[in-house]
Image 1: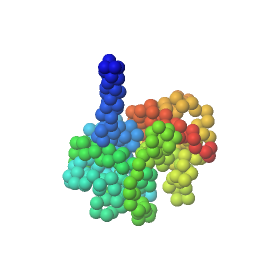
Image 2: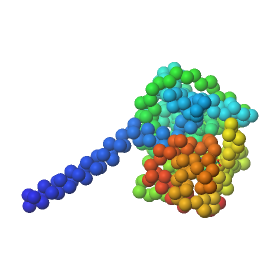
Image 3: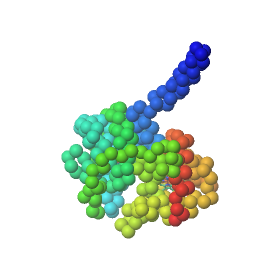
Image 4: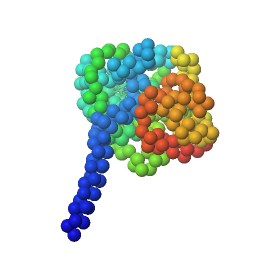
Length: 281
Ligand code: HEC
Ligand code: HEC
């Protein structure tokens, strides 16, 4: 009897160790670091570019994103700098900025930050991003105010309230959560609607937005089962994480391949399960 209990206790201890290791990898700062650098890729817009691409020594300190007929847009400095960043904002104020697009002074954050999708980000993931942002070095970098030559939404909607993420065990639902409210794949890969803005109702159907830059022009392709009919799961994962298409072509910006390179196998699999579950469009 005694022996049996001891064996059980030892087994239990092992189980405890295993689960505490996976829990330990999930502190808010670590979860935030993972989301920021592998899935959400906020830095794809917010990190300045040097001659060699993103300048990670000034990560998330803001940059001139787009300067065209429609707008001159500066992605803000979101490091904890007190004067030029968001060091003086409370956690709740930062979460509100991300999910509701409202700054502490009440002004509305303009596009192309995908606030409409971020509204669906879970409380825990939004707080994890905030915890990670707070852990970063403050970088002094003043970003000018953006100039919009088109009407910007007066509001992104009512207060978000509480949001829970779907259970990761439900791969399709969790993959949809990652592809929408966290990684905004849906933003780029959806057909432009009547206003030219992505029509996320038609999510991922018929090909997506066009992007002009030093690379020329790139078009975000159709990711429904129609667009990816000939692609294996491994080929999709390679395109997303290495930026290499199934025919070997190096894929063009602005998709954040360098960030997605760090995406976990299970998150990648969940996103693929979600894409495979979509109606063909
Ligand atoms: C597609 C580009 C893009 C992405 C992706 C993006 N942002 Fe932004 N963000 C912007 C732009 C542009 C602004 C400034 C808009 C304006 O001037 O009104 C902004 C503003 C902000 C602000 C307001 C800061 C201030 O001082 O006014 C915060 C906070 C913020 N972003 C956080 C985030 C976080 C966190 C993420 C990732 C979850 C993220 N953003 C992803 C483009 C982006
Ligand atoms: C900022 C816009 C943007 C975001 C966000 C984005 N993509 Fe893309 N994606 C593109 C563009 C543009 C291309 C085409 C590049 C080219 O043709 O060289 C592309 C190409 C692809 C391809 C290759 C498909 C083909 O037919 O060649 C796949 C797969 C893909 N994206 C999946 C994703 C997934 C999954 C996510 C989210 C984790 C995502 N993308 C997020 C813009 C984006």
